[in-house]
Length: 171
Image (cartoon, rainbow, N blue to C red):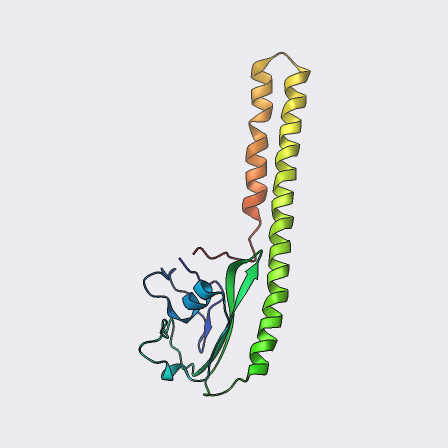
């Protein structure tokens, strides 16, 4: 499935349900599957035999398009794209520039994911450490169980309170 967490159109932000790119790859799905940038000078001139088609997700007047994969650890984690209402609006320089930006964004996203995973592991280790101390400090099972039932809930609440700033795609 593919999600569009930052979809914006003429009238502002938009929302659509996730799409299955195996059935209707569209342009974004094609970039995810191929892992290669795609430059379309005019989306209305895509040949019928093309492995992708332009799927208008929201009211769209898009004519020119560039999409580049966000790749981290040799895995496509998203697509960064720009569109114009004018045909032939972008050059190969624009493709190279967007590819450079996507490379830097991919590294930042991967670092943020690694930082979050490390923090979650540290919180879990701290919770287990607290449980170990509680178990070794008393022989009263009811007291130990009462004290430790709050630890997993506290860890889960901290994770839930944080809104992720990157929404992953599932391929």
